[in-house]
Image (tube, rainbow, N blue to C red; front, top):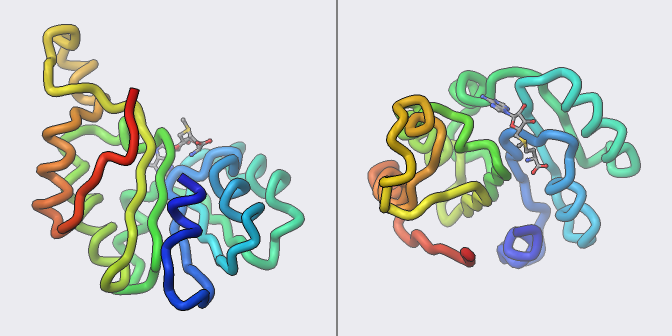
Length: 164
Ligand SMILES: C[S@@+](CC[C@H](N)C(=O)[O-])C[C@H]1O[C@@H](n2cnc3c(N)ncnc32)[C@H](O)[C@@H]1O
């Protein structure tokens, strides 16, 4: 994921990155370690995660801003076309399915034209037979449904980079 982010070519100018659900900063760290010029806005709903990310990313503090809050709400306050890249690791499955289109619409809106959205998550195939409970269904990402939501939000080039 970090490599895909750093490959995003904008004539080597500084990449502005929104990291949704930054957690303890592991993915942000992988991006920062690659020496690509980047600035990262990390958002997490839990204060303890923001604190852990702050500690982990201390060396790169001049390139990192951290905000504690609900990313689904905070993103509404971000202007259009502000970020080159939007990353999310293992966070979207936590967002209830019914709220995901709204979030994806906002992700599309805050990305610059030709912006890149990369998510790595627990994603299941379209075969739902093992997920009968309503509660489970709200908190999983289903591959076909998610790709459709991405297209509905405006994303054109939707790719699965890898899966097992
Ligand atoms: C499984 S962790 C992954 C953390 C990190 N991306 C990683 O890969 O190490 C998911 C993170 O998303 C955060 N999160 C969940 N819902 C969120 C929301 N609505 N807004 C912001 N962060 C959220 C959680 O607090 C948690 O830190």
